[in-house]
Image (cartoon, rainbow, N blue to C red; front, side):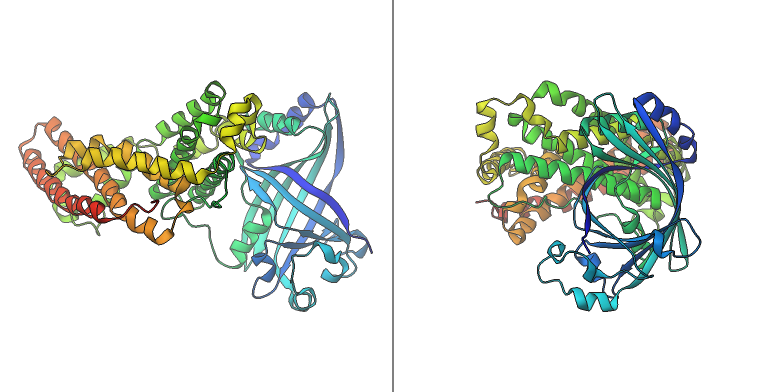
Amino acid sequence: MDTELTDTEIELKFLVSDNVIAHIPAIITEFAKKVINKPSKNLQNAYFDTVNRELRALDIGLRTRCFGGETYNDNHCEQTIKLAGQVVGGLHQRPEYNLPLEGKYPDLSLFDANIWPYGMQIDEINKNIYTIFTTHFIRRTWILETESGTKIELVLDKGEISASNQVETICEVEMELVSGSRADLFDLAKKLIAHSEVRLGLYSKAARGYRIADNQPLTADIALSSVSLEQDSTLEQTFSLCLQYGIEFVQKHEQCYFDAPALHILKRINDGVSLIHHAFGLFNNILNKDKIKPLLDELNWLLNELNWVETAVQLKNYTSKKHAYYKKIKSAPELNQVIDNLKLQHPDVGKMHQVFCSARYNHLILNLTIFLVDASWKNDWNASHLQIAEQKVTDKAASLFEKDWHEIRGLIASDQDISEKAYIAQKAQLERNLLSGCCLGDLFNQTLREEFRTPWLDIIHGIDELCTLDYLKRLCVQQNDDSLNKMKMWLEQKSENLLSAMEQSRLATFKSSPYWR
């Protein structure tokens, strides 16, 4: 039996609200020259793996799908293999293979042996697979043809994922490019995103099902990691990898926030947006400044939407029972009231959900994705750009780090203690240097890199706390209250204590050898 290859899927996935569904027919009609409305299907799917999740480890998805009835029907069932692919900003590209299903369980031996990764134990895995989770949804399908002849399949899936006695809702739109121009696919996506309550979907139904089945909810990262690079990476490849890492980091934590909203998750989103913004500056010699300005403007808008988060995180920490200042702050009702009033001014979860479901935010993520997958930076290249883009990034990284190192040493290498104002003034520069390390640091020894960065990270965290202490001190002065004036003196003492601790970190930076040399 021949394996049917449905080529490599190129599709966009969106998470939508019920309110959006009513607009889909109008969007389709306005966009397409010709529309075929297919009958709705009742799809029952089962996903299989071994106890040790051997398929999952290889990023292989194994699914059976039956159409129509309440029970499996041999005449209307198929088995599907999806191999490792790529997901960027909601654009999913994965090789997919389909075969008719004979019986209730899939049979891996029926697929072409050439599709499997080298060394995969097909027969052994085949004997040990079982149903991990199921999905059941109603699918509505439209085939769209544009004026230019591009064909796009748009589907609406509404139903649920079931695993381990838990259920999660499915309400998704998927757009798959059947033939023709990818630009038309993106144009259709922009029309859908123009409606609020739409988000680009990073995770497949299978990924969501595994998380439920294995009781492994999506969790936020502690911090940005280093972008994975190869020693022979070119400048262009490195820029592309930085952009891809940043987009995925933002989208992952956006989903974390919808799953379990928390301030520290918003901080991670802010970190990811900052890295993307920094990457544009880091590689500006291969980019057209006029072409990237709209993207930078929108990134600045999003950073502005999140500029309250750092202060909010610090205020939450100060009023946490675990914090060393908790008892003192609780003993000052006037300051407590000031802090509570500040917290009320911050956007709540509902308002942040509106930002992440807004047309503006999702247009930004989609436009970054288009810029990345189409390598749009090449459109205006001349011979000089090409020559620069093909340079090895290792040379640029070492010279950049050396330049940054001399600048920072010049700023805080004084023999005298550094003042609170001086530290705060250098916060942005230090953060940019650390972002450069996230983008390019993977080219160098990890242990040496982490040893070098640790005291600098401590200094950054200290500056964040200094900023909040300074903010609280200014609030105390503005209230013109005797008890708050006493609190201001206490806060000033805490700033002095913090500066002493930061001095130890600053001195430690002199002992660390630059890891890029």
